[in-house]
Amino acid sequence: MNFAWGALFLSLKVAGCSVVVNFLIAVPIGFLLARKKFVGKEFLDTILTLPMVMPPTVLGYYLLVLLGRHGWVGQILEIYFDINLIFTWQGAVIAATIVTFPLVFKPTRTAFESVNPCYEQAARVLGVSDISIFFRITLPLAWRGIFAGLLLSFARALGEFGATLMVAGSIPGKTETLSISIYEAVQEGNDHAANIAVIILSFVCIVVLFIAKKLTGYKIFY
Image (cartoon, rainbow, N blue to C red; front, side):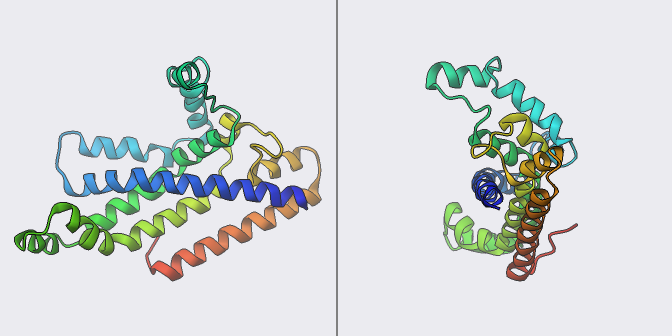
């Protein structure tokens, strides 16, 4: 039973960190694509949405090539900063962030597009700066969609398996998340441990989705 709680804590930490990173990246990009017109806009949208349909193991392989010791990012991190992200919980965060990014980005863009531009134009006429307009008008009006996407990505990150296993491996107490511990328990024929982990993970995901629906009242499924 203790192994399940340890794996759950690690899963919560990885999922929580990935949500924070996704928020910092997806909100500016979602706003940019919702408000600006530029060449290649829809192509960029397609590229950013790819993780939603691409197999997680493929994403994990790309991350291995990029962040591994022979990858150009991995080499820079190791040579200049003595950082190795492979087989670490930080690597699991990166994997979860990439996999769940579209679940934050798409609702965020939709939420910003649903905000009536007339409110923003009226504020500009009154001399309000663009930064103040964003934080005082646009973001508050779009928060339901953004928050729903964040909660949905959190639930998805809790159960992320393929990319995480490729990048972070399965090191007990270090990189073995709850979904990976389920896989390991099944491989070992430990049905009791697998059942406990499955029940815990399922319960947490159901609670998160229920909270997302109740707090936001937003349709998180399209």
